[in-house]
Amino acid sequence: MKIFIYFTALFVFILLSFLFILVLRNEKKNYLQFLLIGFIITIAAWILFLFFEDFSTQLNYAKASAIFNSCKYLFITLTPIWILLISFYFAKDGKPIHKIAYLLALNPLLTQFGLLTNSKFHLFYSTFIVFHRPIGPLYAVHIFLFYVNILISIVYLFIFSLRTDKEMRSKAMLVLLSTILPLLANMLYFSGTIALSAYATPICFAITAFSFYKAISKYNFLENTPLVLRSIVDRISYVYIVLDEHLTIVDFNEPAFKTFPSHRLKKGNNFREIINAYNAVFDYNKILSTISEARKTAKTIKTEIVYHPTEHNDTDCFFQCEFTPVFQKGRYRACILMGKDITQSKKDYASFVEQERLASIAQMIGNVVQNLRAPVLRLSNSTENIDNITTECLNQIEDKTLSQDDFQEIIREIRQNLQNQRAGLEAFESILSAITEQTEQLAVENDKTFSITELVKRVEFLMKENLKETQCTLRTSINGNDEIRIKGDLNSLVHVIQALIMNSIHAYNGAEGFIYFNVSSKKGLVTISIGDYAGGIPLEVQDKLFKQVVTTKGKNSSGISLYMAHATIIGHFQGKLWFTSKENEGSEFFIELPFLKATNDSEKLTT
Image (tube, rainbow, N blue to C red; front, side, top):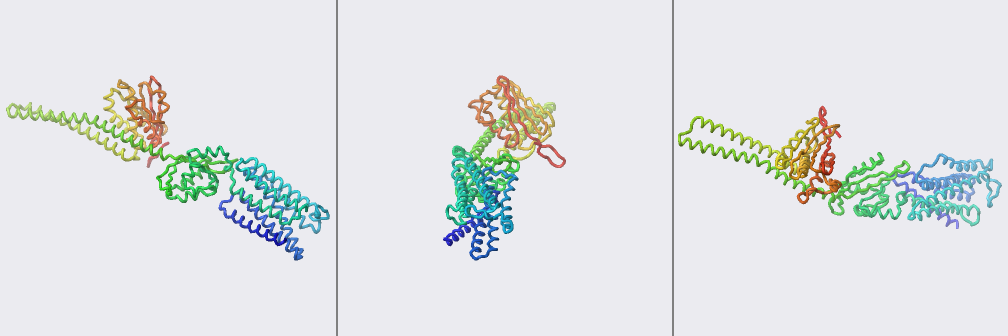
């Protein structure tokens, strides 16, 4: 029988050694895992010194047996302390234990004092017989504190099991039962009710250690998600991943499972493995730095992440991500990564941009036709006049009726027509320059700067013919420094302002009216306003403006201009676009942009 007990104890000792190595291999161990390591070492040492004591007793080595007995009791008294600390951690959800816990060291100290001085004072082993065992006062204190610590631990674990949801309660109850088991075994051994070996109690505590390991490695406070909430999380379209402080995957939803390869995205795996695998196409440093910044600032951080699922041979996916740190009682516990797939939105935006560029081309062609009409007519008239003058001059020469005064008059008229042609050619050159710049803008976006004066002149020049045809008057004013510069593409901003002015022109519906174009600068910002008194925007359209592609001009407009104008101001100029409108009165649109503030050696953006 003893051989079987020895082999069982040896087998349990080996299993505890493997468990110790398993926990120790974890690179980033938390407080709970350190407690578990201490508990495993204590149980293994208890079994080891119990075996040495038993072996020394059989060989009649009394002194060695006494030493091993003292070492054994050191680890026996430490066992309930480790269990109490682990149970407290579970029940209080990681709350630091109070300083009064230092009193837990009282039992090991008293027990060792009693054992070392027993030959003189008989405080540990005495003549008192309890359950056929001679015990002294300190032995009674040792037994009392041992059972009290275990019972308090059981209470904490019971509280913990009640606080968990139904899905996790069965696991918590197994941990509770595994803690009760060694208590019962020790009570039966001490009372002698059942003939149990001294190895029974540490072997049962080894079972407790294995159950604690299972709970610590698999249990997480965020895992306790009600089933209804779990269903909601799986149904939302956002990618949802929860990472603990070591970037271990705690939880994720169905969209995340579909986005990432299923063999990589598993609970318990480290998220670094995924982003390391996709380092070439996944911004590894950006993700880690964003998580670190969110943890440091304790604020939600939004950013865009590009993901290329190479294993799926699919196109790039774009996610608008939110990194939200989770703190519990001042302690960082996890980071919730939520990402919305904006790939389709980007495609839609690109489609809108293409439509807007086509609209820009059409509008540019219309402007070219309108602006070229006057210089072409001037050149045509001048050419015809010169032709008529030269014909008349030749006729007079043939008739010999050409006087000196007539000749001088002919020269004057020819010079006048040549001057008109020169003016027409200058107009051509100016128009072609504007066309060239606008065409380049349609092909590429540039990052140049321009002044308020350049902006105003360009708008006035391009809108001149439209204003003449519609009998509207553009009243321009500049308040502040007109030489301050704005960073961005001039033509993009001109196109936005053109769209707003054209809306005001259409709002007058062919009637005469004034359109106010004002530019002012203050506190690092340029404010551009375009206003009219054409009756305002209907209330049902105001709520949708900038949010949807809507129009007040019926089938004659696509409604893209304002929608894209809003996107351009925000995306390209980091500015704002808003409006005020009163029905039966008028509307005013405002554009607010940061401008460049000149320094001695360079220019910097003022925000």
